Each structure stands twice: as structure tokens, then as C-alpha cells.
Length: 346
Image 1 (cartoon, helix red, strand yellow):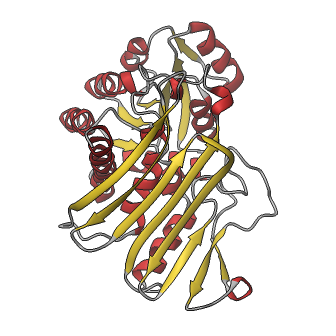
Image 2: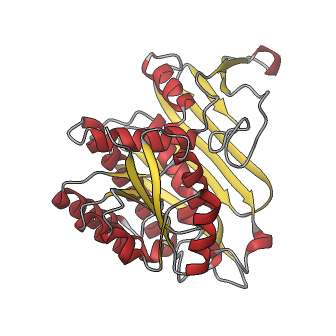
């Protein structure tokens, strides 16, 4: 089977990360790139040996040299690019977040009408460790999962005058979408919610930067009709990277201190000797009694697994995994909208 021809719209940091990951996947070849700044597209293409450079994303999605499109644009234009790609018969890998639930629903409706595949590009969902943690939860090794706690911070304030995350016109919800998405996806991945569970109550608050008016920090709490809960804190204005996840069950708990970008070989870290895994705790155990569980297959970066899994969906569009991927995106965005409604109308 011929490799999937992937075009990339956008030339930012994450576009480069996915482009580099795709170069390690035999089933995929990056054939094209487009950017609103043609010089950036030319530089990006030269660095990654991409043969086709387009001055507009419209040209890229129309090109026969492209089978699928990775959309790494600002949130403000993401729906338009995703929908146009789908209308031109291209499969869509969309970087998170999305404008709102209605926007994402329109994207997915267009994808379905076009008979193509959609997946959001949430990196940690594709890490082999995530699969192992979910297996442990299904096997009852923490009992019934009752609570998810996340804390995600990055020291980014020094970039506020150059980074689009701090531009409310391009990223209207700032950190309350860009970072919070991961906390809410952790709920979907690990809390093992019953499909009938609904949001019983949600509370939260945000902090805005005085200069840019961007959301730079926030926190919240959600309780579901099942009685399960989650609390979360996130932001750009800490002086340290913090990526903590606690999965608390009624018998034991699991902890990951790098659940977003593993310390070993994510795009932000490169520590080959680090053993990727999670901590298993029970009862009144103190730190020396905690058990560290190594994850499998962690030599390959999670972004490579992401691209490989996207290619697998494209090769088998009738798989139930295609619907599962869309459902995860919709459920994550739905929680994000609940939170945004809470913090903007409280």
C-alpha cells in the first residue's frame, strides 16, 4: 500500500513536531506544507525535505499531492481549514483545541459527509503508557476510579508578546483551552465514566494577563451524575513545568508526574535513561513503599504513535476506532464548553 501523503497547514513548533514524527512512520510521507507566511513555509519545507510548498492553505487542500491534512493553525481559523480539507476529500488530523462544541460538530459533520477520517492530535492519548494505565483501571487495580486531579503549568510568560497563545483574537480562550484540554481529556481517558453520566455541577475561575487580556491561569472542579469528580489547575504563569496526574480509586491510586510530555523522549525532554511509567500507591504507604510500574514500548515518542494511529484509521475507515476518536474529541470539547460557560457567566 502506498504511504499516506500528509500535508501540513501551519509551521509553528507543534507543526514541526508532528512533521518530524511523520518522518519516522513508514506508512506516512509529508508531501506538502502551507503557511500564511510563504517564507516560513519555504524554510519549514527545506528543513524537512518537503517537496511541495503552497502559499495558501486553500491550494494545499485542493492538491492531488495530499491525501490527509494536519491542521496546526490558530483556533480562530481551524474550523474553516478542517471543513475545506474534508470537502476536498482529505482526511483531517486537527490540532486541539477547537472554537467550541458547535464548531467541532460542524467539522465532524463535514468529515462524515466527505467520507473521510477525523482525529484530534492529543499527544498523550497515544502514549503506550496511557494504554497500560487504562488496562490497569479496567483490571480493577485501583478499584473504581472516583477522582482525577491534574495540575499542568508551563513557564511561558516571557513569550507573551510573540506567542499566539497570548493573542485573544487568534486563541480566544487562551490557557483555558490550550492547556485545560489535557486535563479534560484525562477525565475522558481515565475516569471510566458511564456513557450516561452527565455534568452535575462545575465551578471554576480564570486569571487574565493585564497586558494582553489572555487567559493565563485557571482552575476548576466538576462533579458528574455518577458521583465521580475531577479537580484541575493549569496555566502559563508558573516558574516551573508541572504535569501532574492523580487517578484516585476507592482502593488505590496511580500517579504520573509527566503525563503530558514524558521525561524520556518527548519533544520537550530527552533523557534516554529515564524509565517511563507511573506510581502505584495504596493505604498508608509512604514514599519508600510506593511501587513504580514501568510502561512498555516507551522508546518511541508518543507523537510517532499518534501519526501511526492516524494512518491506521485512514487505512480502515470502517473501524469502530474512527467513531471512538471522534467521540473523544466531542466529549473533551463539551467539557471545555461547560467550563467556559461557567467562568464567563458566573
